[in-house]
Length: 231
Image 1 (cartoon, one colour):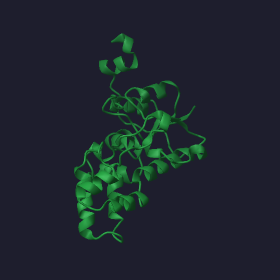
Image 2: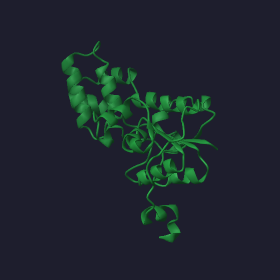
Image 3: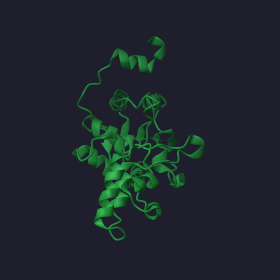
């Protein structure tokens, strides 16, 4: 084991057989990055991560991985968020979504959030991330007029991520249900494109070990994560 990638809904539908250099694991929760480092991973890709009902990946465990010379790359979803936050410490971010968070064009975590099916169903997305909804709607200018596009964008941005489907977005915009079918058939997934970018990068071995000019600060909280029995 050398390269681990944590992913779920963002790679649903991708043929991952081509990425034979990668050990795929479910979306990461708190402690999973630390566990991967302890198990010998030398490169870690973070695409998807749990939140809400699970404690999210902790920045401290990412910093620990970097301090141990483990290459860390993030994209698409939780990975894009953490990469934008941890880039000054050596984490690499790739893709359009990462760039949006790094530049400040995006700031809300919920822009990449989705509700998804359980592992038995491959973490299939049940709702649509705002980043993908916006990309799809904005590309519909040959089929919809500007007023319809504006109404759809407003509706998509106002819906909670757990409620955002094409049907609910179109209904909130006051448009015909036929538009929902058009959107579904024309769907653009920026998340999937960014995830594919990350996977191609790690498959080709294009991640260099991080160089750090900072000192990892051990804390009682980190020790408790590393050894819960000690707490």
